[in-house]
Image (tube, rainbow, N blue to C red; front, side, top):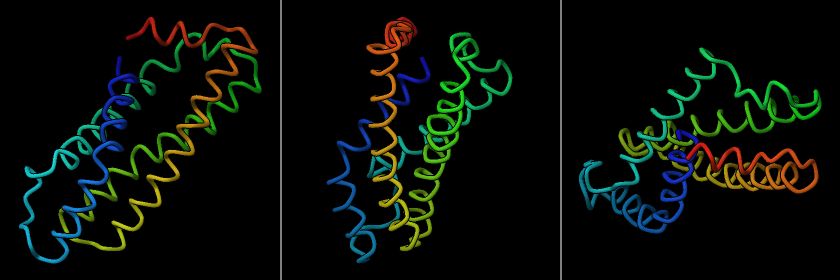
Length: 150
């Protein structure tokens, strides 16, 4: 469930990006006060951060899902490195850099946030592609197992 909630929130963040850019430019120009209530993007970014921390805590406590533990060694390495470490680093770094930019008007943090968003899109594309490879080529039914967890 956490996976899909994070997916939905990250998707919303990308959809709202144009509005966020407009509000950020007004914030830097001093036209609006530092009130994050005006921007759902800030709130949902912080929610993503909390949910990702919760998911990491669950993985540390309970370990990886059963299917991941039983996967071939190469698949576990790919999952742990690309989809695990890189994915979670980005899921933490994007909201943290956004919060630093918004709450403390740290302009370099805003630039970092934008660059990390692009990197996140690449990792999301790889994540989806890898899920499709597992489903269609390795025939391990990963997508159906993931949908079953909604």
